[in-house]
Image (tube, rainbow, N blue to C red; front, side, top):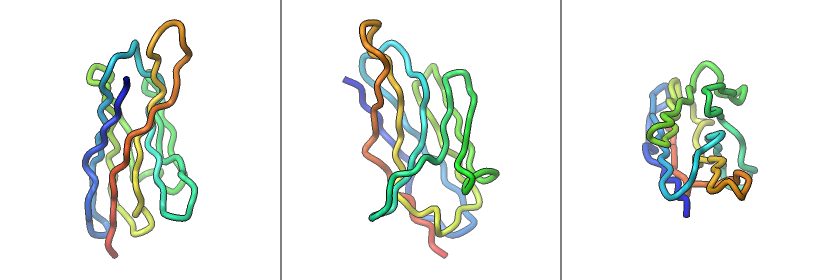
Amino acid sequence: QVQLVESGGGLVQSGGSLRLSCAASGTFLWINDMAWYRQVPGEERELVAAATRGGRTNYADSVKGRFAISRDNAKNTVYLQMDSLKSEDTAEYYCNAAVRVSLAQMARDYWGRGTQVTVSS
């Protein structure tokens, strides 16, 4: 079984910074893409940032220049450095990973339980 555990959320003032971490554990061969999503109650979950195993990244337009995604493949961990936070960044942040558990199966998506980020104005 694969588990993703997020950490690093919390309450921060507008303009401040937070760093989220997500560590994958369990039995698997490797992890392909890793990503961060966020969701506000009543709205759809949206992609914030994603990183391939080789380090290519992409970002939602709303966070470009403020957030940075990175990963440590040896630790099966992905990070999200969030700077210049705004009140509209307030959301539950979820880690997502495409994990290959065996050669007999294609990679499948796993999700963490989420970590709350609240930005006060």
